[in-house]
Length: 285
Image (cartoon, rainbow, N blue to C red; front, top):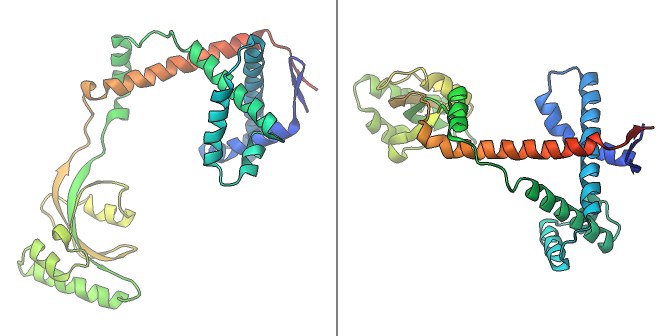
């Protein structure tokens, strides 16, 4: 089924191309959706994207504004620097030659200028709006719990088999049991003895999951038993713990303002496109 927007036909190849561009992110976000429903919605969203793009392109073409040739040439030169294969550049812009490529790039620059103008006089977010955003979205500004941890580790690799690695860490464990300081034992037995095996402050997800499972269940000052990760055998000690905390308003208000500014821009562009669409003739044939 073909789409015609104000007499301009959207090629089936363009729809297929848009579908494949959206597919990776779409399938990641909607992984649990029924495959048939997901594919139908992906097609619909791809068509909507193209319709909106055509409407905007048509509008800027009607304006008769032009981009200086030097500006277009500069944009093309920068694009060419980003492509190892120039043929791919022409394919991405559906251009058969330099003339068509220049036409496509000029159109993109015209669209960029138009959208910038639409958003140029938007009001700044009010203090109340910024504060309300902060109060309603506390979880966004919450830092993860962190612990400062050190470890004694013996890696398993082509030079050290599992039995040998475990035997070294067991000897370290025996010395800890006999009252020798963790920092002394690190320097004697660990593969990574720099800074006493101190990893600094870490939050969940920064290291191997098996490591997280042990160290985040230790109390401050507590030393673990021997445990295994995909890298080898470890003994860990927690020195300090920082609980999850919500950043103060003053710390994040500038980021909130930026987020609200982006939202206002998106809304302004949506209104612009909605106006174009309200008077457009869109057919499915």
